[in-house]
Length: 455
Image 1 (cartoon, rainbow, N blue to C red):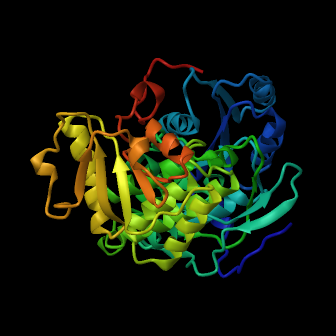
Image 2 (image 1 turned 30 degrees about the horizontal axis):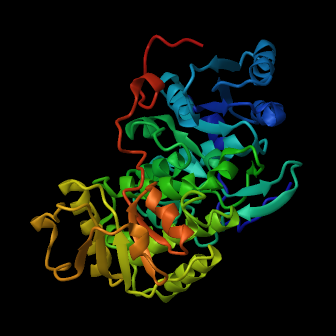
């Protein structure tokens, strides 16, 4: 058994047997996961020294996942199978499980990962030994389709075994590295923060760990107890298609809105956001999402980071490198921008506001607004920072843009592709935010979901 890491802390599994009521619910969410589902279920049922229940939540499988899970349920009374209505994601399933659980502890599980036989008993022991902790976790061994070990993730050498609230936030920023299936938590703790937020389908776990770390201590077991499988069908692999680049910053903004976000860390918000953007942009390059015509362009994240840390030479180099990789002309910074907003007072003011932000950061110098005859820039938008730096033209955008400039446009505007076709990169604003809508109770995006559902 491979367990890498510095074993400075090892919980005592014997405390679990000595502590009444130390039961755990393992909730496994699956959609078309029959390839690895049997192994994922069997490793749970083989756990030593714990009183457990395994609930499998199916989210619309078209393969034999439900049939396979029901086979285990017929043979083992500890297994239950729940088939969700259409439209549920992983975190909806977790909320449904948490809401109905009577167990003291809760373990979110995946249909393709594998846990060692003492994974649960060690993490329950860690939580019993640290009654103020909200969750316990461990690093993982990253494995491929065939179970071959590729890496040990993440490095926890500098992490203390127990960190009181909110100290573990230092570990979670600027990028979350706690793997979902490595965690066991107190059911009461996850309920206290309202469960998972399924509006973010890719990084809702990171948001959850931050919310918990602001309120509870965290126990880190420094050796691997879980094998985290990476393959083309898994959610974390699909996350690299560009959606993570949008959801990650949205999650960080949502965490910053929490009144318990530590003030000392809030002061570094721009730096954290820039570091997160840089981390995500390299993921986009590996997926060859280089232009906005392909998705959220890698250089677009670098441009966002420039507006936050304009003096960072590494970000400048990254921006230049990524614009060149997209086969576009690198603009001279501070850049001349051109943009064609919606010809309404609100649309015009919004674009000018974004230009003002970039100009204040030293990233942009001048803006040409492309407006129809008769349209005017609202006076309120012409703040001192942009005074004398905004021109208005009724010419076509393509007649104004030229190499060395950049196009300023809202996300998904056709102007971005038009500009890139001329070799001109874009600066974007108003990206989609998954938190712009309320949670949907009918889909168990809250813990008080509909009471009419049945398995």
